Image (cartoon, rainbow, N blue to C red; front, top):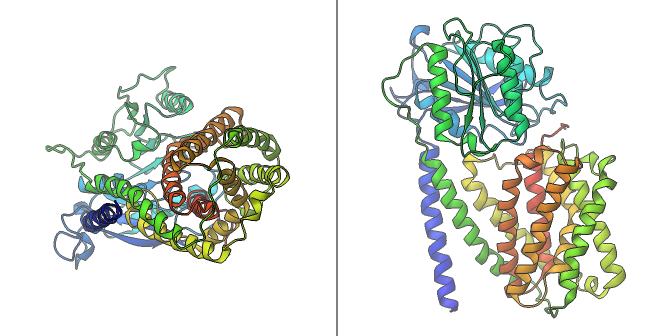
Length: 529
């Protein structure tokens, strides 16, 4: 049995590496692309049409003499959403570039690699300045036709580009993906497409329709109907994409095809062939994610073997009572956290609310354990150094393996600001994840996994309740599926550790810093060293 497990782990690791190599091949392949730095320290990636990313005639970056303006491709400024960055938009950027357009995908302030502080007003002067800098960069570029530009954004980015489009009448068009919030500027946005997912929140559906109707000048817009004329700059359409949600619309080939057809109309270009929408990175990244989840088993087992084994506690009603205590603590912490989040000093926009909520709930649970079951806490100091070392090894392996395939989801590198946020958030949330493990994980591995999985469902249900009650930022609901994926990975790792050493401190440490890293990478940063 041991040999079968060992060889199985080796096979999974080999397959993971082979798929990863293939993913790296496509990541470095066409369309031609390179990182650029815009004024104000804004990082961006410029994509151009072409059949190769290597030096040569199929890569416009290596033109010795720039082509005349009439031979240069029209261009798109692409802006990501609230808890995202330009990496998330890379699939759409590549698809647009493969169909003949230049694309400049940017990290707006407070997001991704952009270390500038995020502006509180999502569609105010801050993001407007970022979009303007991107547009001006394209207008001055010798790689694209700066007289033909469309601005495009997803979610928060949709609001930013719509805002900018009302201040720049020289654009060829604007595409708002699952967003767009106001028409405050003096100009009527030219050739405006509002495209959203069937499973987007209802208010985004209604808002898109209302904005489109207002621009057209009708009381109610008919979805899927083209109003106005591209040549005159008056084209407007509101489109719902079936079967998609707020996240998957960014990776959808159908949505990309609709957007590319709109770009063709804006720029007056007729393509005979069907749009080129293939991006093999998506399927390869999905395979890597599944294989990574399996690799959490040997990672957990190996690291568990480095630590002091804990004696398993016998299953009692305490585990089930722990589920009730978990639910009560999460619900009680919500109103305590609502008006004065204790983690405001973290300076991550909205993310501090989640960290504070879990910190308060964790403190209550830990106090309860200390009063009712003090013997549970006496084991924490045993073999602490070895446990800390094993947690560092496990976390390092998780960072390296997950970051290697995360090229279509999020940029995995921590800026100095995000590193500080991760460390402080870990300190605040450790009591919660430690209490979670102490209360729920006991007895045989199977039963411990079942009870702990129910506990994670309770956390998700509490988040859903908080969204309904308004005690948790609504944007968390848009990325809730990603938390479900991470909680599943947590449980796979935890079960592997528990099956070998039952060391709950190791499990809690890794879960805490892993969750803190996700929070630090996802939420907008509002400070800079």
